[in-house]
Length: 128
Image 1 (tube, helix red, strand yellow):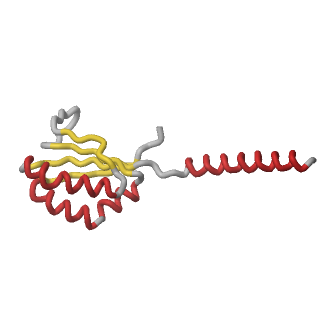
Image 2 (tube, rainbow, N blue to C red):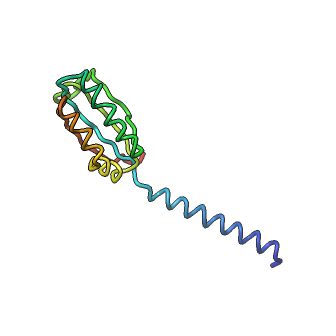
């Protein structure tokens, strides 16, 4: 085989191996994780003014984002939360759990506990 053909073939094989490796890495990627918080708020104005900006900053600091938050809740089954529901998204469960254990979140939560009671759970997204 002549040198130009051999070089071209080597480049093509290398590109193919690289593409397969990238596919394998994507397949091993961890699924996003979500936290869902039901909040029973005793002082809505103070909660929105003093707690929400603090906790949102801690979420953004780890690359998370708020997917939705709402107060007009209609129960389809079971008892509805009393005041508010919030859904946050994180890159993966490890990031979510690290956020929950962080000193920044603990400080924000001290403020939030003055105005509300929380019930939170987390889950990993299923592949679509």
